[in-house]
Image (cartoon, rainbow, N blue to C red; front, side, top):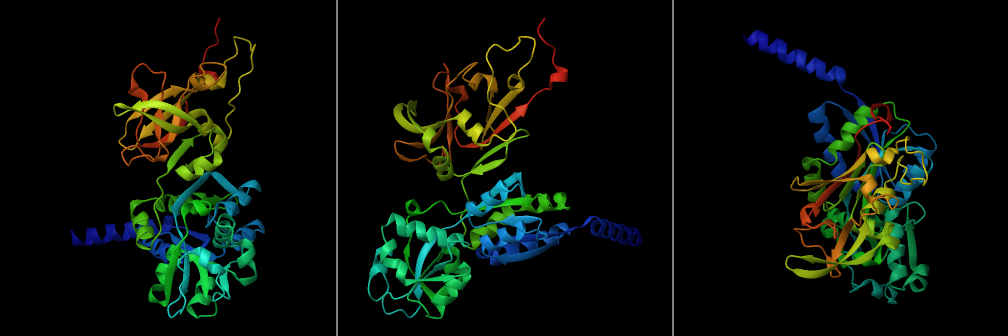
Length: 407
């Protein structure tokens, strides 16, 4: 029996090795400690090998554009991923945000002057301020957002020292080569007592800090890349990210074979669909509230992919519109699911008002409702209202070949 078990264990090991694969992941250097741990855990569980390449997101993006052999890219900013998407270099259906971060002002541990806020960077005692090179380092871009929003740009620009990546900025501060620096919250945490956090940048002063990840189109190891990408969203990986100071994102997942898969935070939805936001009065929990909402159809269009959301008038009644066989599936975190036909939402057919609420009375939605909720004001009963919306999917329930035209 023992001999049989040993043989079985050997065969299992050999099979695992035979199907194991090796992938290369290029990632923002601010992820170094957390991603190194996650990759090690993943390798132990899967048998796949993950080679990690860290650097400034802009530099990594440029390397990929020049043909570097990379399977998965993880950026510290949306801009760099958008550039690769525009060049058709990533599989946009695999793109997702894996974590978030904050931005902080730090000074050397033995600093004699500690600014109380970002505005104090104009003080004459602050001679040099280190930030990442904005052309290639997202942390530098976020720092410039802060300067712009706080009207500090003219005063601080002569003081700036640009680092090749955010870790170089951190080193400048640790060594006392500058009086202050702007880095991610996680970088300050990793430095421990070597630096002091002087101030935290208000979230409203910069674009949302998210880390998008995607599979590179040119990869020859798409299956292995997808396995690792999926692992990055697992509870085990999220636990590691959180332990290193990253934030887990309350995201809305938009999925569908005809859509570009997307993961959006409320801030990103507010930014991307700013022109679509409308105040909607709606009775909730026994009282009337005003919700800032975007149309459900607008969310689907933003993840449009290959779907055509237009219908031409005067079409031959014998020709089936593909939109009429597509169904929108909205699912809450508790598993509660409601359905809408796409035609029900389209202006030329049903034109039903279905809203995705982003906030309530000017405040973030309560935990029991967030990150977003679904509101259908015209329904006689609120049975299709969904709290804590987790995902929105567009599903094709048939093909033209399986449908019969009207006689």
